[in-house]
Length: 107
Image (cartoon, rainbow, N blue to C red; front, side, top):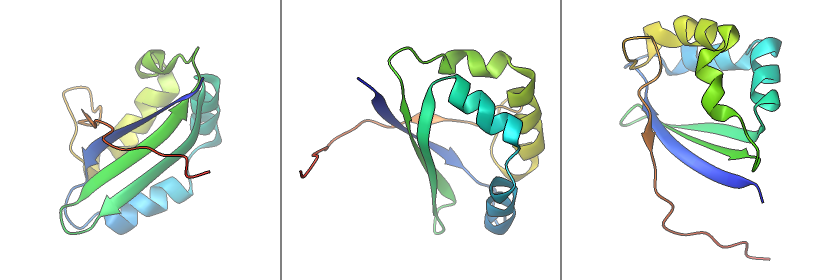
């Protein structure tokens, strides 16, 4: 059964519009890599008061998401985004996994 996960990242102050612009023009190769890794329904939300980005995604049981950091396209995307968000030594976004505290299908 697919799994939904959530995590937090931090945008640099004053970069909300640029972040949105870059994602509006996300590279087709990056989207293809996400799909190939078993990722679907990927959304990112911004809290403008804190510059925190909340990302949620659904990944297949047999996802290969953990292999994405080794792909050339993913590393290029990280390099492209590094100037507008908090990143680590390899330009990877600083990611804090979030714990689910409530879920209901309401169906």
